[in-house]
Length: 196
Image (cartoon, rainbow, N blue to C red; front, side, top):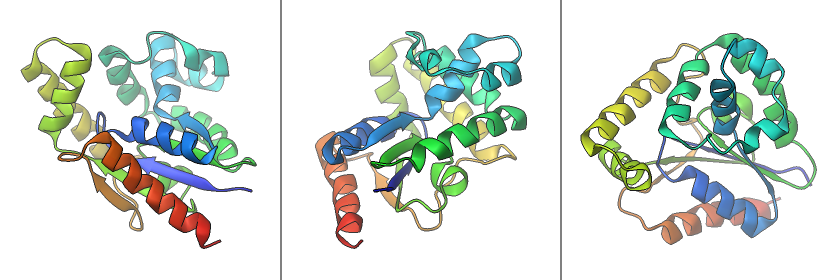
């Protein structure tokens, strides 16, 4: 069975946690597409060459979840040649046998516009910054400033800006617990699976 779940949204909204839970619940493979860009940014040097030479092992680096890696990912993601080098990999993963969940910023709009399920997971900038601060520490006001800066960069880029697909279901996790958010997402997937 080929079945794609596309989950988009800004940083620290909960899309990664939800995506992993959905994949586990339904036995689908999971790809955190942000790791592709984080790995390219962390490798350094020429980002286009890094993207073209990216290996699966590069996604297992221990430094890919840091704030610095996230900022680097956002910077390299605006380079059209980097995006082009990573798009085909994502599309092959999404349409492979057995079902797949991909989370990122342009899955439902660019990578997999024909996905069977499209979700857009979001939360207020303040809630997302607080979550990131709890995870990484530092100055909470600075984390909020960085979250807002990243949002502006991701939403304002010319190539595949962060936005909800017109047919995506919105899940706002600002006031939700993780279990509630996971159930909302799983209910959407289960409903679509039952309909095919």
